[in-house]
Length: 134
Image 1 (cartoon, rainbow, N blue to C red):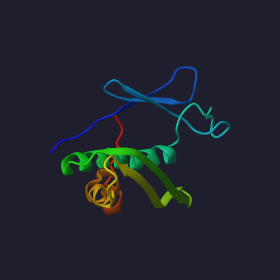
Image 2 (image 1 turned 180 degrees about the vertical axis):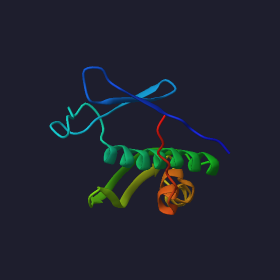
Image 3 (image 1 turned 90 degrees about the vertical axis):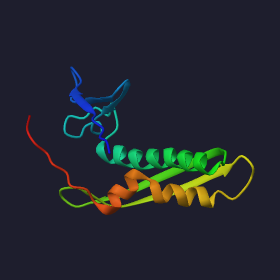
Image 4 (image 1 turned 135 degrees about the vertical axis):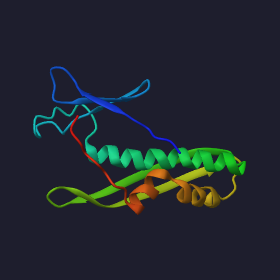
């Protein structure tokens, strides 16, 4: 069907990394004082939560568009629970609120987005991850 590749490289004079896909960039770092981190960007847990919430935001728009429903305000909060050594995400909770432009109940749009959200479905089903040296 397709694939997506992102690239990451270290940021000179820091221990952070810059990631990019096309023209979009993001800084990845550890919290200040943790393993050389300077708090310059998002850590892995935050990126995972942002991926989950961001994907759901997009899928709300896709679902609404397909259903012919205009959306107004969207509010999403994502909490992930971390534990263990090595640290693992044990659970994720996404809270969604949105308004339709015509005042109708947004439940159908939310349910459609739940059914199609790539990140939440991928996490729920599990994916193989391969890590190799270059």
